[in-house]
Length: 335
Image 1 (cartoon, helix red, strand yellow):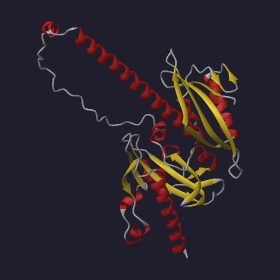
Image 2 (tube, helix red, strand yellow; image 1 turned 60 degrees about the vertical axis):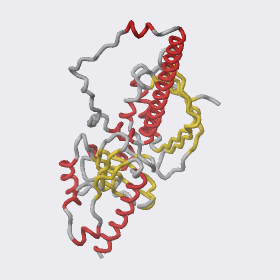
Image 3 (spheres, helix red, strand yellow; image 1 turned 90 degrees about the vertical axis):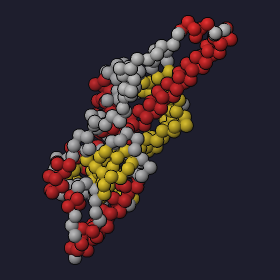
Image 4 (cartoon, helix red, strand yellow; image 1 turned 90 degrees about the horizontal axis):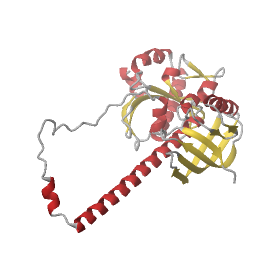
């Protein structure tokens, strides 16, 4: 009987591991560096590496490496989820590092291959074998590819190897300087005009490229900002807000502390949200002072309890970002 129960548990575990590997961390975005052995393999002969977390991934965009331990639970027990065995709790202490951290991907509700909810919990936040429902909700994420910026936001101090190698091939060498005067002797007005046109076009191209870069960075910031809100990561969201914020929805001239308190109050009341920005409506306008005004439409779903139905709102939002890509204003635009 116990063998059948273990097999059923491993079957569910395998189904959820497949979900984690292919839905949350797909091959298109993440390189799979390690995967633990299957139940069949360990049933024949136990492999020591099976004590490691289920996966070790490397983000193809940033080069960041991290472990993921996959856990699926159909129901909670005494308002908590059993996420780590005593052995894992102790062994993972030696595996987890700042540079290569461990995340616990907890699926709960629904089925193992289609869980109703997903949380991505940093191992360093797990103090014991069980995680309360309340703590699990704090780390709830969308049931889709986990963006690299979200991982970065959870571990902002993670070190990355700098693969850029500075070219020192000319260091210490004497460069032959051309004769400036002789260069200008043959240049006529036509040459100068061509050169001036080339410089102007180059400046226009550089300016356009710089703005495109800023626009892409702001879009990534907006995307990560809402991912963190949807997963109740209020402390990490605070890193996106400027101390000089001057507008915040219904608050006039708020302080940074007031904004953070307002976010906490809202998340306590509505811990379940799903935000979908319509990127086709996403527009960025740079002002003379260097601030960026960003407008977009989005679908916003919200509910107060796990079993309650979502309420859906279609919103038009205006956010203002400063030169440091910090949020200094956020307002809903009335239609």
